[in-house]
Amino acid sequence: MQQLMDAPMTPDAQRERVQAVYVRLNAAYGPLRAPPGDDPLAELIGTILSQSTTDSNSGRAYARLRALYPSWEEVLDAPEDEIYAAIKPAGLGRMKAPRIKQTLREVLRRRGELKLDFLGELPLADAKRWLTSLDGIGLKTAACVLLFALGRPALPVDTHVHRVSRRLGLIAPRVSAERAHDQLEAALEPEQVYTFHVAMIRHGRRVCHAQRPACAACVLRELCEYAAAQHAQ
Image (cartoon, rainbow, N blue to C red; front, side, top):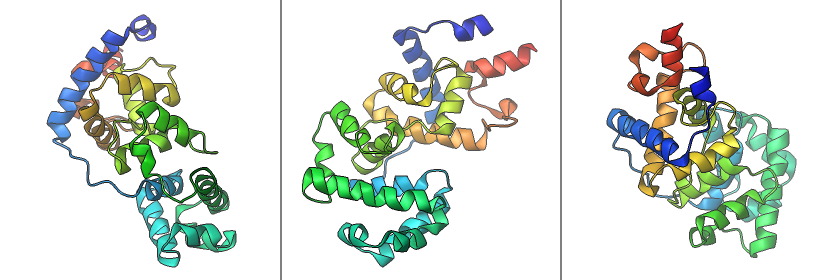
């Protein structure tokens, strides 16, 4: 089994595996439809706040920030200590407050305005490159902005998506989350990306836990290399 898991996988074989998983996830958790898109700059700042914290904490921090500063121009002009105080519920405020100001400053410098709507018109690869060229913005954050705010078929790979994908054998054991973005995204149809992302997160939270995954209750167990290895022991 270990030799099988370490063997190179062709793009066609990877696509076949991902599609098989998608069908079962869609049956278990779908159909899922993306909500109307938000302001992409708001999504970017919200995703910065969400790093290393819970959705509820980042949501509270974002609501406090926008209550104090209704416009992004006001956030940019605000003292860093005031931003830190507003976003404290999200944690890591001493890192996130300057990053927010730096991001807004760089968007304004490059674009002449605090808007990112133009990303919806760029080729997907170019939109990713533009976002990840901002300091501290990685592929996951860029994909969140493109998927959730602009409805682009960019796949964010968070800890749940990465863990479940490795256990299922959708990616090789040593494939990083960064590399997994392109590999998994290429194995999906554009209209499947949102459902796959959300369903994989739900599955990771409800069934395929980091510790003691509930393999017996898993709708994917027949497709899962991790479950097969555990059964063989």
